[in-house]
Length: 144
Image (cartoon, rainbow, N blue to C red; front, side, top):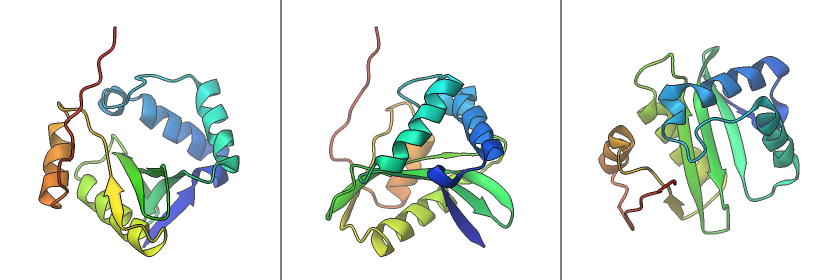
């Protein structure tokens, strides 16, 4: 059974677990900001309480936490999604994507899903292509 736990309802232990995942080098290398402080993490979660255009969920399957999914820039027609898997588990991407697709179309009732992935994130791009997501624009983020 799948359970989505809104970030605004996470326990202290769950917040710490997500923080550890987020800063794990296997996850952080695909993020715009590579490492975040605990203070930044907790402030971000607190900011979600007043946000109407974004949702973040910890995904639990049969008692095991398998990853994080998010929806940002939510409008009546579309939203952007993101995800990262528990870095200690393998092969969770397709499962998380199916949860994203189901939630976006059945709960958010959007018509279009968007995402952004680094060009070097070959696993994500291959998964998106397998699910017939189309590339609209190829982007690269550069940092000085």
